[in-house]
Amino acid sequence: MLCISSGTTEDSEILRKAVAHAEENGAVVIAAVGNDNVREPNKVYYPAEYETVIGIGAIDNNDTVADFSQRNGVFAVTQGKDVMALSLNGTIKKYSGTSYANARAAGIIAGLLSQVPDSTPKDVRTAIAMSAVDLGEQGYDCDYGWGKINVYGALLMLMNLQIK
Image 1 (tube, rainbow, N blue to C red):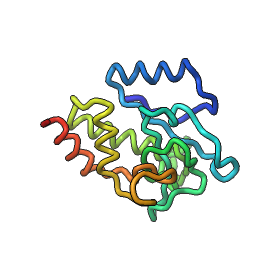
Image 2 (cartoon, helix red, strand yellow):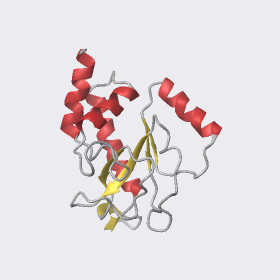
Image 3 (cartoon, rainbow, N blue to C red):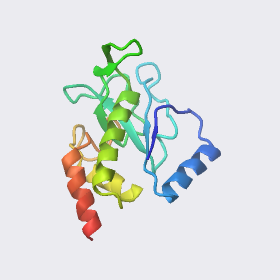
């Protein structure tokens, strides 16, 4: 798995090929969608925008999309606002950003892969999309993507995909 919490606003052939290479070799690629929505809502970040990348947006404790979270390239969302995390000086503080949501998603996906290790990147994307808690407009939407990642639903879906 590749967890990318940075991006570029320019579509790059090298980056596109690197993502394709990772996918071809069985790596699930997830990426933060960016934090510029308030200032530049039309900004697009790569690799989150690529079709095979799981672009992660941020929501708050009330499952409302965070105002800073980009609305482009969102595949799914997890908590990314007011996340309690260890600071560099060793204290626990609240942080916000799609990188925090992305780290949470990476942990979830790592857990899924530990339970169903033969899952392909496509299987993981399908399981997340099909089991997500739909929070926005019905079905896929730009704010929430497919919705909030449902850990147990995605696990059951992956297990069912492996049986077929």
